[in-house]
Image (cartoon, rainbow, N blue to C red; front, side, top):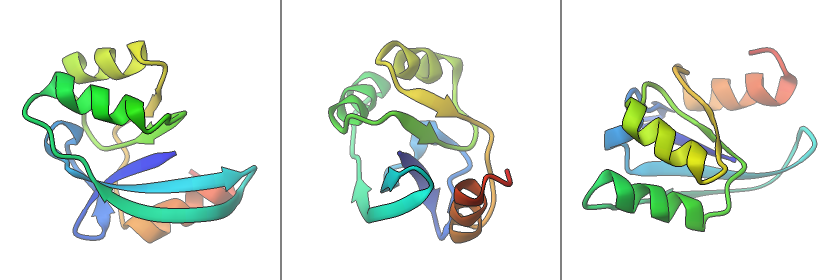
Amino acid sequence: MAISYSNGRVAPVLDVSERFVLIKLNGNDELERKEIQVLAKNLQEKVEKLAELKLNLLICGAVSAELQDAIVKKGIMLMCFCCGDLESFIHAFLEGSL
């Protein structure tokens, strides 16, 4: 899974977010975590780069309908309109308390 983030928080708008934390899970156990930057000239390029990551879930804040539709068409499930401190959000997600 990946979470778009900015300044230690879930990024408020996916369309302009460039930073993501990738988390590899086994059930609710975190196996691996790394931070990446996705630079794209336009929304379609962003979608292609996100699809290359083979994500099953992308967590974000707000997202435009155009970007949401394109990401879902690539088979990536979106959890939109999330907010808060990144570490607190990850902990709550893994605990199943969102």
